[in-house]
Image (cartoon, rainbow, N blue to C red; front, side, top):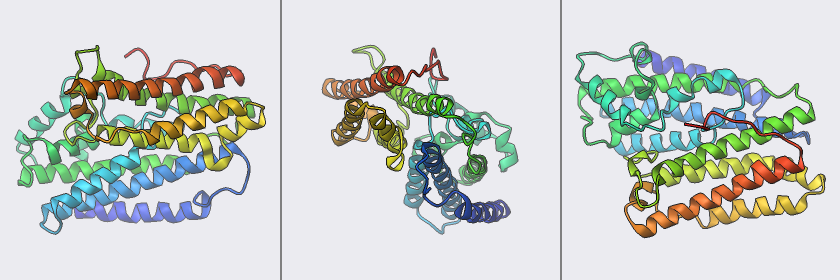
Length: 339
């Protein structure tokens, strides 16, 4: 297993060095594409570096070199890094193709829990090759959360340690694919009209996905489904959602030359103001609780969650409807529709 970590470390270091000379510097241009690409490329780099540290910390925990709290903290940092890219349906196909391997959600039938319990019962010394042959439910961040937080986990027993080390090593390999895919700008050849379609769809898809993270657990009024919450075991659902919104705001602004700036230059300053103000007010009034699971246990918590959903719905209206109409952009269906 150490050979895998050494290979990962050297590959990540090489990729990071290459990135420094190519896309690691804030663009001097006023081209929206350059700045949005820079944000995406940096997000991918943070993700692979964080997942590598997660693999290393998990190994350290299982060899009594680090505390469990270190692994938990590193898992949280990797989740935070993933939120910047989660739910996006635009970008390099090689990056998008491993989304499910990085995180399986929604987990409507607790498939992760059942599959992880089954793997622990197998008389098997796990490695990345064997993990890659298993269900995507046991390959990503949710599987690590299960090992760290679920009562059925046997950490730090040897079977759980072997399994966790293999999963975190495989996760680092998959995030490396994401980082490598983002070394090339997929939008560099697009004209303005094509780019605007792509740019707004990038925001719209991620926003749709983020709203699903609330609508699924909210379910029918009076009949919530808290176990549909993302990361309900670690009680961090609302924390991750906030990082989603911050990431969308970052892409929208794009270092001052993004969609906000474009709308203003096209004579739509009022619309730009409303979007900017709504991003700010949504984040400033974010719920204090990090656990959506806990919020849905009370009437007031349910109402607070519904209010948050309504705020995102208004943001969706501004982007899906007003921006698209003003710029004559048609936003089509995406992977979160109809499921």
